[in-house]
Length: 491
Image 1: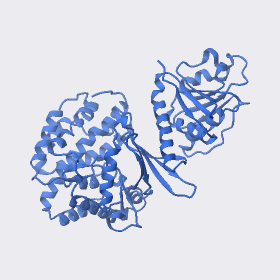
Image 2 (image 1 turned 90 degrees about the vertical axis):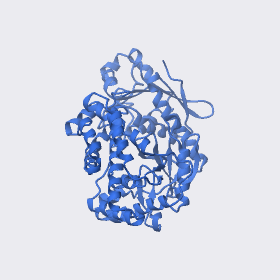
Image 3 (image 1 turned 45 degrees about the horizontal axis):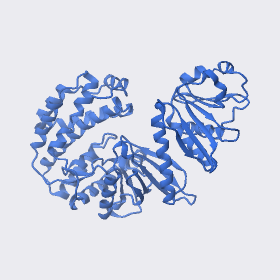
Image 4 (image 1 turned 45 degrees about the vertical axis):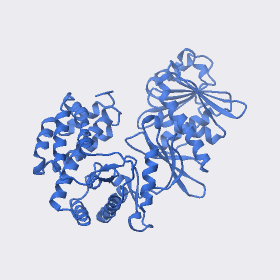
């Protein structure tokens, strides 16, 4: 089966280079791209941009000459070789074998100009990019078997994003800024004058909903908080152009100067207090004890499965978690942002008060337990927070809310245990199912904080169930998870 052809307009040489740069990260070993078209169509220009984008991702900036006379140029990268071939001067298909191309087709990324010279050596699963003039301007027509469907979707979405940004007055190149565990990705746009914006690309067909982001963003800004201003939005397409809040992430600042931790975290706690004191955004989903208990099931379905081969125990684990949550004194739910940690917070020193903290990644906001975001901030899966800072922030929160310290300690331990169990399952799934093994490296910190929470005497029952069902993430167990990366389609 073949994919429906994808047509991409190329109104300029820059557009051709952009296509090459966007195609670059989508290729892997064994991928062959056939570049067809007449002399001057832009085949070498596209190949050069693709190769330079792959090299630039490793901090390398090299000239990429045309292989017109050498016939083949090769480039070694951290993950694979790239072969760039120009077969214009070949007189017989048998010469392809002499160049070593047929062997490279199986192991390298191969870009082949004048692919008609390949004859019977043409790979059946190659991507064909035909560059031509269609009367209205230059166009690229991409065709190939079904294995390229995902690549076509990514490139087609990039073209839609181009049109969206141009309509908003930002017809400028975009550079990858960040991605995360979801399908969302972020790109920075820079105008000639130096002003910048950020494109959030959240594909609706991948389950993303920018409508939720837009509603929460407006609510937070109405409270005087520094959620990014929305410059343009197409909710149906999942595209939002945002104010660029800069690069001063808490994580980056604290790596440079750990002594700033207490001051930055105090400001972050004050943001949470501002959100909790305000009337919550209407219509938020509820993250109550039942939902929180159900959310730890993936710890059995994915983490336990990876390390024991058995996916049982979910009912026992969720039951114990539910009992621990039910034992907490009832409290009115508040608006929680749910992904509140140092990687999603920026420092904006030119602003005042709580507006000095830039807030990102809040589209999953819900109504939940008042300590949920506090625990998310202080028991961070991605960085260690100094014990002194944790204690000071809990005391700050207790003082501001009038909470009994002992009751607050139990709430933090119980909610913390829930978060860590859920994240164990989520991060295991990201490795086993989605193919992102880097998340397994966070498991020791998550496990350490989970054990600290389970040490609270009131959580002895939950601790016993966890000890019976879930093995610790030892180095060998982490490697076991990585060895299964991307191999489990369903639990």
